[in-house]
Length: 74
Image (cartoon, rainbow, N blue to C red):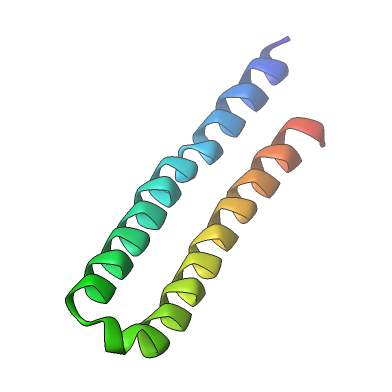
């Protein structure tokens, strides 16, 4: 019984990283939109970097979910 509670607490702590991921993705896209609004000619240079930042940040979310599921189901 105590082991199930500990698993739930551990999985909940692992999922806290998703809050940071949400903030990071919002920050990436708000900065991307602001930079393109300031200099539309730089879109071709800035957009791929923004997408790369999004992909790397989203990978952290997938790792956090993976750890949470590993804690819960093993």
